[in-house]
Length: 206
Length: 206
DNA sequence: CTATAATGCGAGCATTCACTCGCTTTTCCT
DNA sequence: AGGAAAAGCGAGTGAATGCTCGCATTATAG
Image (cartoon, rainbow over all chains, first blue to last red):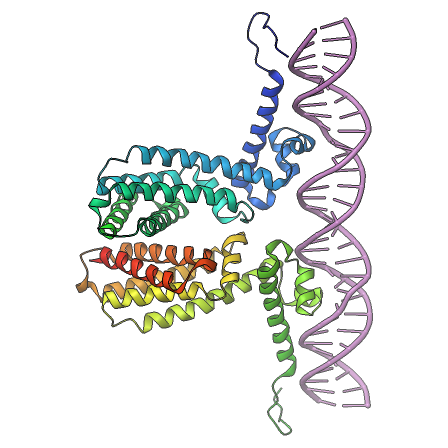
């Protein structure tokens, strides 16, 4: 079981190799989704693009759905990391500043790999993942709610859960529509949208 | 070409029959989508449920996609009729009243055949229909914009197109999220949401 | 009534696709 | 070195599915 490294602590090569395979598969899936769409993303094609065999694919992913789910998870994780960091950095800011920052981050986060984001939003038949996706959704609501409760004094009297729902819906909607129109969105336009959304949400909260 | 009716002006039976077939097909498609999901909606199955043969199906719809598109169109038409009527009845109302009414209608409209709505939103890979769907989207934006321009005096100074974008995004987001949580939405809750959304939008406009 | 067109039929074709299995190659460990 | 375990391979399988095509049935016109 335990062993001494001869000269250098050699990494477990076999684990490395398989990790690389898994990564290649997820990466290939994402690339095909973006460049050719969901319909063209067959398991054979994915394995082909990843440079591995279908057999290997099925050693790590029990089904095609699992692969797509992995892509979704990876993307959501990337987004959530940005979002979590933003909330951490915003906890003590007053409402106006905090909202402006969060709106900005929301739009930025939606623009991580925007093409993939669009495909996931438009082409993937959502089913089953509900658990995963709803977990993220709940986390965001919880974060907003926590912030709002912490800053109660700056706001009118309102149920924090309800306020969180309204804020999240609004901000997500704007961010979402911004990605979908991605190409024709100038920097200026984004700034304006941030301003407007901030105004809307802040005005609502107090 | 022209012919005299023997006793009663008989409707062109053959046209009637084919219309019935088309209707049955669309109806069957919608039912399968709702009850079994997009994946189970094969052309054979649709024809089967509609009580016609696959051959007949392909006489009226060039592809499976066309059938689904027909279902979507039908549903969007139903929604748009309600929405158009609402705008007509609201044109002369002041902002507060108008927004409240429009928010209510938006939520109601999203609840026309809510199960179908959910399936269309969650399971249908959107592609190509962009033209159709965007037409509706544009119409709504135009309607909102027209209303806002008509009531400029009640608002702060703001670009009507931008304001329309913000209002539509917000209202649609709330309505959308309301359908998705459809089951656990009490009447009371809906009322509260209407109030909150109205407050948010009205507060934003002035 | 008969000819012609419209509508409907459904077995079957061609294709695609998710997935399996028996085998080979690579890596690890002593 | 040598054997075992891990990783990889890819032709093949069976099932599903979109769609066609030759024929049957029904309606219309003269």
